[in-house]
Image (cartoon, rainbow, N blue to C red; front, side):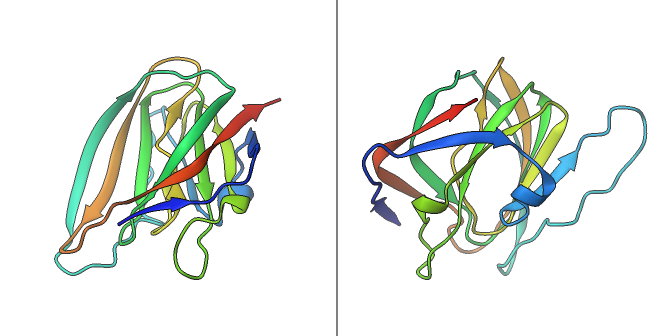
Length: 166
């Protein structure tokens, strides 16, 4: 489904450091263990389709310095989506809540700076911008579910939204 979401003039968002509480409406943080301990992180991993197939992929991302602008968002209506940093310094993520029809509410848009060693799981249906590496190239493992219905939706923003940090 394709849609253009209306954005007011001069839309600007200040990125803030991510915290468990601030990110909770959108998902969960995953502390990446680097010292030989095993931790199970299935909390928040979910799917809502029949015949689900687990999908595991990796991605490399070139860095983009702040300030920057975003022009689109995406969501996975039937699956959570997890990103585990394989080799990443700080990175930026942008998320928004849904309106009653399921479209992103741009006035709810939040931008978070995620430190090295922290992964994330987006809740099912959360609108987000693709991951943005900040300081250096980054690579991530991505985990989600696919099923018998299309699981990716994209929207274009009518105007760019500027993201900056202190």
